[in-house]
Each structure stands twice: as structure tokens, then as C-alpha cells.
Amino acid sequence: MTQHDVLFALIGELVMCHSPSGVEGEIDAFLLNRFEEIGVPAAIDASGNFVARIPGSGPGRLAITAHKDEIGACVSTLDEGGRLKLRALGGSFPWVYGEGVVDILGDQCTIQGILSFGSRHVSHASPQHPQQESAPVKWHDAWIETKLDRADLDEAGVRPGSRVVVGRHRKAPFRLGEYIASYTLDNKASVAILIELAKRIKSPVSEICLIGSTKEEVGGCGALYFTNHESVDAIIALEIAPMSSEYDVVDGPDPVIYAQDGYGIYHEELNARIAHAARQAGVALQQSVVNDFGSDASIAMKNGHAPRGACLAFPTHNTHGYEIASLAAIANCITVLEQLCCEDISRW
Image 1 (cartoon, rainbow, N blue to C red):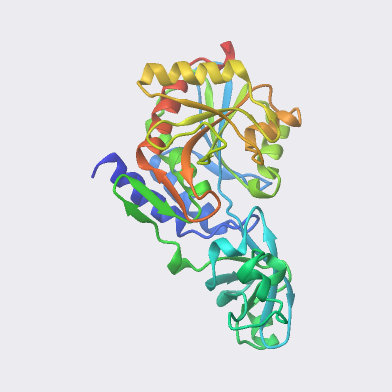
Image 2: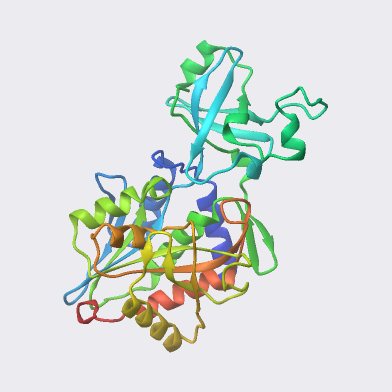
């Protein structure tokens, strides 16, 4: 298998682990098992972060994060006839998922329902009519049909706050040559980078903390907890880079580092060190400024929890939807970080 084959297969396994913000047990179990196989000590901290540590021979600590939570929806109310009303979980939009099967993660078991928007054969008198001509479907317009009674929903543990994600059978990635297309690449491809990086880092100078952060999509909660309880010399977040005409990002194998996002500016010296490591590794980088975006690193810096922060990303189409990304760009993120982790972080 080529490196791209390995990445595609690994991301596919990760995508099939449901992990809506705050209900991340499936991916936690996967990561604990995988890192045990690799031989890198790991644990889930009190906040729900997955934390793997590679000890250094000298001083310094670098945190590299990839958030393990995914966006979706939350049940807000349970109506008669098994109809569930919803609200957003993170930056999700119902029209992105479309009508179809969703998985509802009850406390006792997962059940299926149909995300529904209403009939199309309607007149101006119908609340669905604007959706066909002038207004996007919003969460308050959508619902889930389960055709179950309240007793069945109670038995499954479905309640206000139960998480809803795209049905598992709809999530399997599709390969487009040297590209991968899938829901939840936003977090699962970044987590794959952590796993592959753990295989490569041997005897670093400084301690390397590989963190699958929790609840990033709802405020960067996990990264804030970690950086509040453990001092780091720098934090680098792995992320997606939106492909849009407003940003200076082009498709292909070249990863992206951000100068600024919606939370503030990134650390110029740290960005320069990442760029230097990329040149040493023979990888070209793009630089960009983005809006309506935040990462573990920018959130930690804004709150004064980390002295230096950066974000390394791979160009992605359809962000927070059915995403498409270059396997080469994902692989190049691993290469750059492997080179960077050879440095003495305490001298930065």
C-alpha cells in the first residue's frame, strides 16, 4: 500500500466513529487502542481530551492538537408521533446534509430517523414554500421522523440534548484519485495525522503532546482545559483550510499556515519555524488569512493560555459539508510536523 492508501483507509476508520461534541466515546476507544498498538502512552483527561505523550530528552513541550469532535445537531424537543425538533451542534446546516437517514445517539442505544424538511408540492400558504425559492432550510425548519412512540424513545434514552449525526452508512469516504471525499474530514483527517505522526517521532529533544481535543466545535473547550492545566511552549492546531475565492488558498498538495483568523493573529515566529521546517522537508506551504474560523491554537492564545500558537491546515472543498481534500496535502502535514518535532522547543 502507498502512503495515500494507508491514509485513506485510516481516515475511513476514523470517520465511521461517531464523535459529536461531548459524546466522543467511540473515537476515544479507537484512539486508545491504536496508540497502545503504536506503543505511545495515552489517556483521556478529566475534560475528555485524548492525550498521548512522547517524552523528550531535554526541556520544552510542544502540543499538537487535532479536535476529535464533529458537528451535527442536538434534539431540542420530542413531539407526539416520534417527531424530534433540533438545534445546531457547532457550525452545521441542515441543507448540507439533506433529507435522509441520521443516527440519534440515545443514552441506551442509537436509533435511526429521517431528517425531514417537508413536502415540495405546496403553495405560498405553506411554511415550506420559501425554502424552494428564497430561503435556506434552517434547523428550526427541519425535524426528524422516527415513527416511534414516546415510550420507545424513552427506552432508547433519546431526550433533549441527544446528539444527531449523519447516518453511519452515509459517512463512508469516497476516493477521487488522489483525493478523499467524506463528511467530517474537518476533524478525522487531522486525527489521522496525529496517529501517523506518533509512528514517526522517535526520541525528540522536547516533549511532544499529541492531543485529540474535545468539544472544539463548541468553543475550544478541550484545548482551553489542557493549556490551563499544563504549560506549553507552543501549540499547533491541525485544521482544514477553506477553499473559497475570498482566501488565497489553492487546491493541491501544499498545506496552509494561517496568519490570522476570527480569534486573532497567530505567532509570527512560530509560523516562520514551521515554514523553515517545511523547506527542510521539501514541502511548499501556502499562507492565508481567514474569517469566521477559529482553532485550538488561536482560542488558547486569545485566552492567554499559550505563548505561541499556529495552525497547519490542508486545503479543503465544501468545509463543514461533504468535504474533499488532497491526500498529498494531508501527508505533507505529517512530513512538516515530523521535521519540526526534531527541534529543541525550549530554544524557541
